[in-house]
Length: 110
Image 1 (spheres, rainbow, N blue to C red):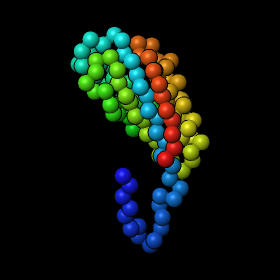
Image 2 (cartoon, one colour; image 1 turned 30 degrees about the vertical axis):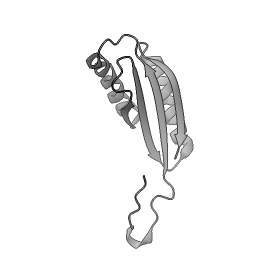
Image 3 (tube, helix red, strand yellow; image 1 turned 90 degrees about the vertical axis):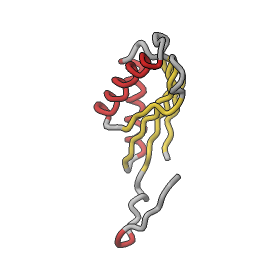
């Protein structure tokens, strides 16, 4: 859902804005409870936010012990920058957290 608010002086602030979205479907085979899953996800989300200055959150499969869907978002005026950063995020998850398997991913620009 997009909300449009009248900008002062008629400037269209959204015209150059590009939103990049990375969706990761993860498998965490070592998790045996939701509490354990949360304890593994929290450092991942915090580090992605800190290292890449993105928003990241678990968006689906919250009730499954060994799977999760994480969404990462970035906003800028350059879609190639967004693409590059989100690809770095994906590479970082695959290389840094060896106990987490990326089942699927999707990068899209909105």
